[in-house]
Image (cartoon, rainbow, N blue to C red):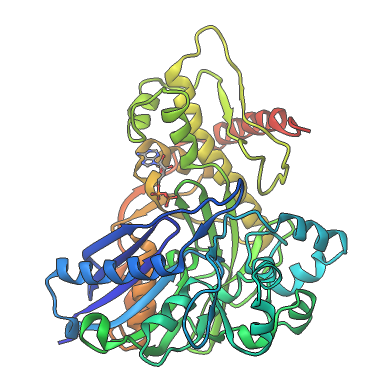
Length: 496
Ligand code: ADP
């Protein structure tokens, strides 16, 4: 009777719903884009009602496409764009203003102030995060300070805060449950990842009343029932995780040291570190991966600011390729980059360099260098940057890398995947189901309701589609990395 799990994947640009069967295969999926709102330079907002309505519509369409009855759905899992902040009225359900999206920089100055006041070590120690405007804390503070009446209402217990998971769940559940899971809570910069509780010192410092915060629950467990109005059936909502953590779970990275990289516009790397919250010496973030069955597992997180975006740049600004996919054939049309290195530090350099003044650089040009060499160098740069973050993770966790699991749009590029394996010196594995984020949410929900019995069973569901074996001998790998690091040095501190 219960043959499917549905994952709701609420992303930054679209809301998706994915129907998964017991073998982990995607039966049907439907995505709906919604508007991005840019009120001022550097500001990014979403309309919470559009997030909700697009997500509900995606759910209905996916179920329709799958041709299944709602009664056949065993559970729903939710995964979401992280850190995006919403405050709404407990009684009316009306948001007090638009959602402030994770990318929004409006609170950058507040972060500078926190750092100037010396709060960084305390914040890092408690939350695992490097203070940044990405996270919810300063966004909530901004709303309470700037939306008329918000602070008074919050103090009177009339307002609720949530990341997108909490907003969706409050609206989708019959009971109007106000919860978030540990993985989402760990991105608020208000949550102590060691004690797994909201932190009074941080709340006080940010002037945020505790009454607005959701209850923090496990990532896998029944937390409420889908309102019958939505699909015509009552279905348990049983899994929640932030998008990157869900992808880590969907890649079945269940053991300490396992790593996944999502190659999207940016690159997102997460390493599972088991029950230990590893503090980074290299500017990586420590975050909760998930909590289930009384066990909390952690991850180290690092990102590459410009990954697939460099391919978009080749296409849109440089007009060197007609489509992202064409980059592969162009790169393979030459045997190497002829000594050309491209450092796409368009917005500075992230881990392990942390140089906001770095800028894009093209070095090693000779008279014979051409379009194909530059395209190839751009793809290689995605792999080099990923290798740099990976190296930092391996050092922080004192765990040598054994393989890397890849997903995201640019993981379709075979040249990139092969070069990544070559430069890491370990196999890169691409899974059969590339919707790893949705799959992760589905797995968390399915495990909670007994649709799947155990993680071991789920481990067997994950299957590799292709394994890219490293081909470089160690000397060659070291020589290439050395050249890359020389190129990075030339890109550093350029804008200073
Ligand atoms: P996001 O979720 O960040 O929008 P996606 O996972 O959809 O990203 O991936 C899109 C990114 O991947 C784009 O930046 C695009 O340039 C890049 N991309 C897509 N296909 C390829 C390809 N075959 N080779 C290289 N890059 C690609």
